[in-house]
Every structure is written in C-alpha cells, then in structure tokens.
Length: 380
Image (cartoon, rainbow, N blue to C red):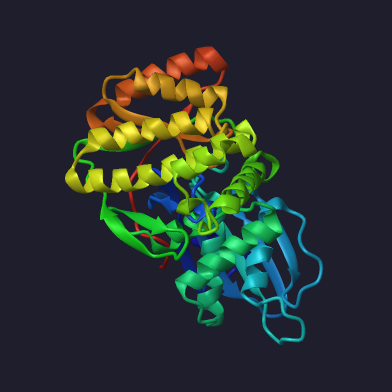
C-alpha cells in the first residue's frame, strides 16, 4: 500500500495504519440485543495510507478494486461507490466535513487481505482504519472507544447496516493471543487467553457473498425488538433481551408469532453459551467450546434462520470429520464462512475432504483461511 501510495501521488504517506478483521468464536446476533460476544482480531487486515493534499481536494483510492473517489473536504456531493459510503460516513463522524472549516484535504490508498463478504468484518476494518489514520493525520484526539462508535454510525447511517459494536471493538481493541469477552450494553470487556493447544481455527469460505443491508439482518433485529416489547408488558424490568430469561419468554409465547419466539429464544441461549465458552477456555475444556459452537450453528439455522444450504453443508461435513471439535457459520449469515475448531495436524486432510464434496455439490470450490489471533488496529 505504501508503494501504491507513492506511485499514485509521488510522495510517501504520512500515516500508515493496519486495521484487522475479526472472528467471533461465539455470541452471534447478540450484540444489538445488549448481549455478550466473544470476538478476536485476526491476522488479516486493511492497510490505510494517508497524507495531506495541497488543497481542499480529497482523493481516495481503493487499491483492490482499482477505483477512486474525489471530493472536497468542505463537503459537497457524496461519492457514489459503495465502499466510499463507509469512508464518507467516517469523515462525517470525525467532523471533517463541517462547512466553513478551512482544512487541507487528504490523499488515501487502502487495501488488504480480508475477503469481502466472508463475515470477517472487512467493512468495520475499513472504517476503523480510516478513523485511526485520519485521527492521527489531523490530530483530532478521539480515543478508541469514540472511534468505534463513529465507525458503527458510518455503517448504520451511510451503508444501511443496523449493526452493533462488536466488529468495531474487536478491530480496535484486539490483543494478540486473546479473545474479548465483551458486554455490549456497557462496553466493558476482559481479555480471555486463546489457549487452543493443538487445535487451530480454520475458516471455510462458502463463496456465497452476502449483503447484510439487503438481507434479513435488519428484519431479525426488528423481530427481536417485537419480542422484547411483548416481554416488557409483563416484565417491565427487562431493558433488553439480555435481561430476559427463557421462563419469561415462555410466558409470553402465546402473544407473539412463532418466528419472533424462536428469534428471542436463540438470543437468550446464545448469551448463555458465551459465558459457558469463556469458562471452558479458562479451564482448557476445548470439547465444550466445540460443542457450544455446533449448538450455535443449530440455533442460527433453525431458530434464527440466517443460514443457507451451502453453510449447512460445510458444517455437516466438518462435524462428520473426526478431528473437528465444533463448527458453525460465522457473521451475519446468508453466506460467508464457517468457523471450525480443528486439530492442527488434520487441516490438509480436512481441506481435501471438504473441497471435493463441496465442489461436487455446488460447482464451486470453497476457500480456506487459517487465522491467528492478532493485535487490534495500530498506527504503524
């Protein structure tokens, strides 16, 4: 990216930032319900290079797509490219588009190795990377928690994805060799060592590309809100689904649709699995970790209804393989990757096992990514 920046602008970048994607071991679709999640930053990232321009003109190059967007720092017409909506949202949240402010524009080149649409939060990495880079370049003084919230707002208001804060927090606060046990209500978190012993985390990319803004993601969120409203009529102390119990949910079952009941049931059970996995990791009980991952997939498939035939096929293949402790779809759903907890010595055999069968069934070869837990975003 530094070389691409120099080739494009004939100067070296002033600031270079690495912003990682993330995995989420357990705790899917709980973040926007004030629940608990268990993500980690990974060794796949977006690199953002920036430097000041000589005028108010901004030029941003998406290196991997060979596309560019230009505009004035004082605002004006929002760029049309889909990726540029995220960048524009960050500029707005950072206060850089405020009219009347005399400020030089900037040049930017970004790119990376996070597969887009695979459920690894490439969009959150882009937003946090832009935030870190421009915060440093302009000396804006935002802390990481504030940058996470600005990045969340960029996705919500400018890209149309009503996401929680898990992805942004994982990208900004990740620590090498640790998961984050994050409480999405008050944003407190603690680091839990990722002691996986002889096991590794392997992603299988179905190559089904999701688009969360166009999927049922926002509808699931609305269904959870509908269930919470029904619970609150009888249990007003529940401020969010994370306060409810399965007994409370069962009590209001006749008053909601079967779909709403199942969505809420999944969320309540998934919150419990996050705590179970944290305790199991601390105890070195990887069998329980794997069992919880598989239970999460069943919940996402049957109760939350965000899986698809390709993801179910990959998980079934994994659970039939003797060296896999657990497998599940990861991310918003409707495509992307499965996450597999697998013995490190079996990875090559597993890939061959899955590749042949998946290709025969769907006519597309899956992709595989062995991921390692890395530090969060850094100014290099």
